[in-house]
Length: 286
Length: 265
Image (cartoon, rainbow over all chains, first blue to last red; front, side, top):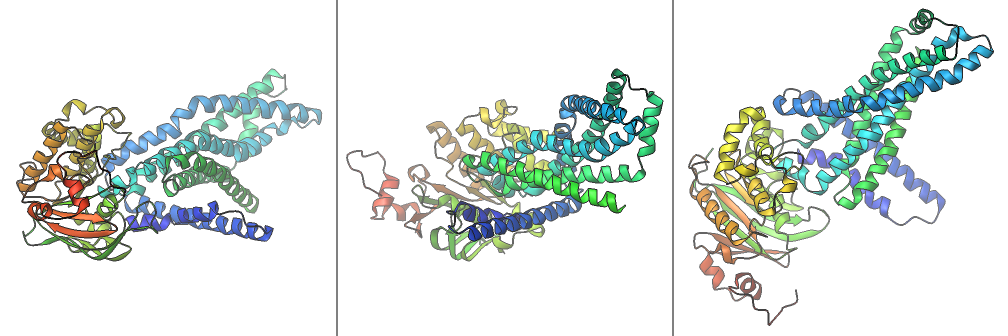
């Protein structure tokens, strides 16, 4: 158990490299950055595989302990963020519609308002914005909690009790975040679409609610639903992986926690953008 | 599960102990040590002598840099899921307790039972409260560790380690920072565990503790070892320890603190 985790966390050794003085030549500097990037990718890949393995293998282990933990994480990464998401949804609807309605009306293309909303809100902005907000609100908390737990020896304490730290600490967060990003994205999209119509109504755009929602329905295909679900679950999964990985792998001193939190958020954003790009490619291919 | 009195519980042969935080740093160079079932060992050493690292390596939290370390005949290096039953025969108490800050004292103590027996907190409550009562922790059951003093934290950590009734109990500097009343309680309670306590079904427990001060541990039945200058030395019984003509040992056994002299480490 310990060896498995230690192997995953080998990236911590790379931090010595990170702290080494900067090399003088630019090519050395780039080489070191590339090497660190590859180490990070390797570490994150291994960590996500181990976590997936633990989720599948220990699905039935200690369910009475794990269920409340998972519920707590879903509440934290889902219900707890609902008021903020409702505000963002309304703001997003007003902003997108506010900008696009006047432009579309100028070119007599008001009939495309539903299509624009689907492409902009359902496919792109909704999931990405939800992922970024969850990363900022819950991801940072993850890094700090796990980093502190590692620095204060709680992870070792779990191991002495024969409890797999990945199962107890990581699995609930991964499931909670995947479920949280998915459900919050759905709320965000619904809120943005409804507030989008309200904005259009306030601007005297000649479109009835029936026409608006008909446009939306016609613009949405089964692929949108399937890819939306996959994409948001992937966002949640990888945000949890990146933040938990940095929380568990890095800090052995409390002073390192804040530095690592910043790095985890940066990498989380990069990972979300990469996943989003992959899904754009999938949309185009499909 | 109870051990034959002659069975080796811990076997170290040429084991090199490295630092838990800096794995490239060797803290103790060669440990050759066998702990037989039913023994009570006290490993003494000053600060930074590697006591905690030795305990953590013994508990299987890190492998030896060289040599071998076996618990119940199993290499700690290969402790995996399949050896979980043997893993649970070892109880470990950290120097600062290392309780989980997001759980209450009761939840902390109940966690190993809940996790390994798949129980809800309600189902584990009866046994947990009985143990808390035994250890005078019942009034603190619903308090989080951040609001509890070190003496009680350590006691709660002991309760957590005893929850699954281990055969081997490893204690990292348990008496450090405790008041006289708590020290007395600990020594009395550990002696009861060692001889076979009702809580653990009357079976004698093998105990290994580390210490910075040997005085409280004075007892002819216990066995002693010393960590000094990266060396692990077996000292034997209290009589043998007392007969040693060694400044460090004499310091560790001083009955009153002599402040007129100070030996630089």
